[in-house]
Each structure stands twice: as structure tokens, then as C-alpha cells.
Image (cartoon, rainbow over all chains, first blue to last red; front, side):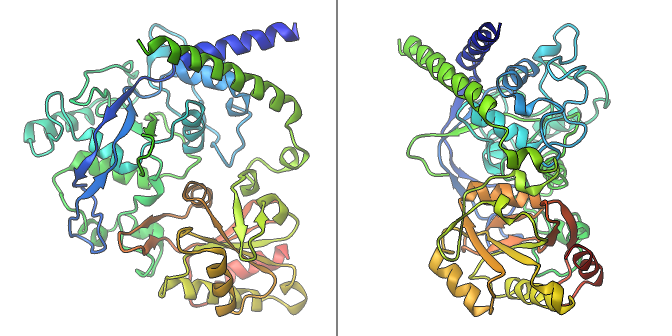
Amino acid sequence: MRVRDVLTGLLLAAVGLARAGDYAALPGGRFESVLPQGDQPGVSVPVTLAPFELRRTPVSVSEFLAFVRAHPEWQRGMAPAVFADARYLANWSAPLEPPAGAGALQRPVVDVSWFAARAFCESEDARLPTWLEWEYAAAADESRTDARADPAWRRRILAWYERPAGAALPPVGGPANAYGVRDLQGLVWEWVDDFNALFIAGDSRTQGDPDLLKFCGAGAISIIDRDSYAVLMRVAFLSSLNAADTTSSLGFRCARSLPGASR
Amino acid sequence: MTHLPTTRRAAILAMIAAAHAAVAAQAAPAQLVSTLPGDSVYRLSPRIVDQDGRAVTLGALRGAPLIVSMFYSSCDMVCPLIFETIKQTRMALPPEKRDRVNVLMISFDPERDTVAQLKETAAAHGCDSHWTLVRASDADVRQIAAVLGVQYRRLPSGAFNHSSAILLLDKDGRIAARTGKLGEVDPQFVDALARLA
């Protein structure tokens, strides 16, 4: 019995990993973030991104199910509160039973904490993308690697926010962007590794309650491109999170550094 | 063409990993971890090294209340104020309770805060034997900050922007209080500390 269970587990794990995320290679290079990257607030300093790989799609429910099977410590009820809040995987009917229904397994997994997302990525020899990597990948539309200046593209992204909350999420696998990466816009919010680097307000020299400073008007001045509402909404959302938080619209994908490339 | 070997290699690696996991799952529930509360910061197991070059585990800090904050040595504005505020906070305790409180300071800056630099910083701020200053890898620092709710980013100049939180952990590593007040003692924080010490 026990031996059979172990064998079944091994097989499941093997199948899971063999299918583990499909990654696209992104060239990196000079990139101008919406967030100031220099020492001076409000002054744009382009950064140079090392080439990296990014998962083509967000992690799906079925992929996360395979992960918690192989890593019981990440099943709901097993993950300690410090790593995942009380609503972690809350819409699963049991720790190993994700929501049922047609196509439910192909939806992006949501209700996962930053720690859980990190652990998943480690399980496929990857990590969470940095904010800059995510923003860089998400600047592309279907044909251009940087479509951000195009008002029509901006409108399309913003239209996503009009989708009623509570509607069932579409499956992963929307149209590919110029890098072959899908669903960066229009499906779910996504964790990034340095979500806790995204506070918009100045720094601790600005005395006062940091929670109040996070979204204050003075902080917003230091944003380079105030027309990038969609990206800024993400930044505002991510900067409001704690690492154990989970929400029903927050998923993730993983990234990999290329050998020899520094982040 | 390279497809098949890669897949096979992945499958073999998976089997090895799964076998490891199976063994670990049986041997694991280390007593320490299993008796820690679910919301204990000590569930995190970063690799940290103190100002004397010794490896420190968070679990070893269990048993006494702990004041925790994050800093970097080359910081000349807020960080000295954090050290000063923590010193004042301990001094605000009745004498018999002061020595029951330990302090853990985690550097944002593993690159420049070497063990020698940590030792120098501890000396510069007159830290007694209750203070532990530590460094960890960037990835571990990111995790520690995440679990403490501290936000930070490195600037191109090598300086850091960061929120300046001072936290109080109870003897089991649960967050019992937090303050952003610097340069003066936060009475509520001292009260919480006095109750635990």
C-alpha cells in the first residue's frame, strides 16, 4: 500500500515536472520603467536587463495541484499562517480538490501567497520574475516589443479592468505577445519577487506613517509616465500586499536567469 | 533533437526530488518546527551570519522577546536613528527586564556589510552582547523583509530606500508589536515589551 503510494507519487511528480512550465527566452537590454530607477525621484534612468526566461503562461490550477501533491507542506491547512493567510486556496473544496467544472483546471491558480508562489517556482528550478522583468515583458503587444506609447494599446489593457469582479476567470493561454508570452495583461494580477520594493513614496527619511505615505500624492509625483495607468494600478496593488496575503485575482508565473547572466 | 534527453533528464531529476521529498516528509517534522506557532517568524530558515562570523538560526533566538529591525551600515540618516531608538527602548524598561531582551538587526546590504563591517557597526553604536547584527543573501534578505512587512529597494548609488519598522517578537517569534516611530520611544511599544520581558 505504502510502496504503491510512493510509486504513484513518484510517477505523478515525474509527469508533473516533465510537463513543467514552458518558458520563452527574452533578450533583455535597455528598458525604461514607469517607476524611477535612479537615485533622484522623478528622473528617468533606463536600466539594463539581463536576458532571462519567462513562463509563457501563468501557473494553472492543474499545475498547482501537481505541486501541492508533491509538496504536502504547501497544501491548504498545512502551510503555516506566516507563509499563507487564512484564505489560501480558499475556493478549493478540499486540500487536493480544486474547483470543479469544465475548464476549471486550466484557469490560472489564484488565492496563493508570495511564499507559496516562490516555493512553486523553486520546484521547477525557477524563481519569481522581478518587477522590471515583468514590466519589460508586459510592455509588448502581439507585434511590438514596446507598445506602451500607443494609446489604442493602453485602452485595450484598461478595458480589462471593466470586466466584472466575480466572473469566472478565463483559462490560461490567451494571445501571445511579441515574445511569445501570454496573459500578462487581462487575466490576473501576478506576484513578483520584489513586490516589497514597489512602494511609491520617497523613503524613510520622509518621517511619518509609512502606511499613509504609500499612496500619497507627493509619492505619485516621482512616477515617470503618469499615462501608464494600467501598470501603475499593478504597482499600487502589489505595494499594498503582505507576503502571506492571497486574493482571488492574484496569481503568478515564474522566471529563470540564464546561466552566467546576473540579475 | 535535444528534446528527448532533456525530458528524460527532467523525469529522472523529478524522481530523485520526489524520493528526497518522501524521505524528508517522514523524517522531517523537526521538533522545533512542529512546536512553533503557525504565525511564527521563526518558521523561516534563512542562512544568516552574525558580526562574529557565526551561522545563526532564527529558531535559536526562541525563548526571549526580540526586537528586530533592518538597516545598512553605510546609511547615515535613518539607520543610526534606528539603533538609537532601540537602545532607548531597552533603557525604558525596568533594569531587571532589560537583559531579558535581545536585539536582531538584519542588513539590507550583504555586499558591503561584511562580517567585519557588521562588527565595526556594532562597536560604533555601542551594542552590547544582547545585539546580533546579521547578513544574508539577497534572496534571504528579501524573504526576511517580506515576513516582517519591511519594504526596501536598492538604488543605483548603493543606498537603499526602505521603510523603517521596529518590530517586537514574542518568545516564539510571533509579531507582538510594531512601530515606525524613530528618535523617541514609542510608549505602546515599550508597554508591549515590558509585558513580554
